Length: 242
Ligand SMILES: [Zn+2]
Image 1 (cartoon, rainbow, N blue to C red):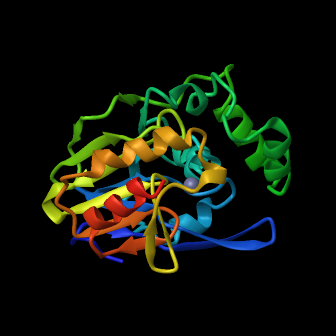
Image 2: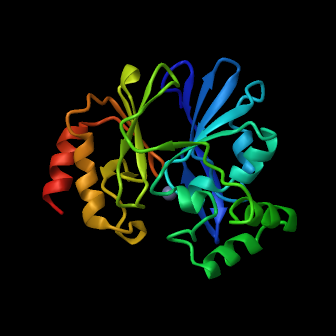
Image 3: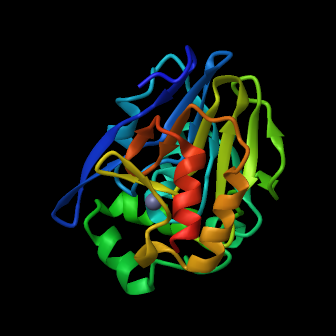
């Protein structure tokens, strides 16, 4: 789905643990290269690449947070960029993304289970990239409030709660809000963060206030995709009903 001539929402279906999951990374084509916002599950690199124009090598990745469905193909993206990948992430999630701290939501057992489904070289690549023994992965740390030089300006909004370093992104020129996992779309309706996947629900609801007063026509949720209704009205309903 195109948001602008150079910004596209990828709809990406895959089987995880026996059920189908649909996720929505975003690609921005920029001066012969591609910027990717979130990277899918471990093991899904080839499928993801089918959605990206091969004429535009991915040279930049913005990770909205540390969860496995967002960082999963970072090892392959790093390898493909041959040391030249720019990786943006918030300082709150940087330790896990750099391999310096355990993933907050994936216990070692869960991680083993997830990785055991992958071919050995992919398991090894994942463990090596997210290891304290290898160099960190984040090249550009974010705090919230930055204006990134992509698609004519992409604003970083800190939205902690789902994870401590969760970010959302706002693209003023197309009036697009990229919530990542701060919100989801379920059955066509925009909803708040999903409680069973959110570390600090109170903080995650508070974070929705950061979307107040944004001029938004299109909301893109990583889980659920596009929503084009009245964001401000939904925020009123969601923040008051919680
Ligand atoms: Zn997610």
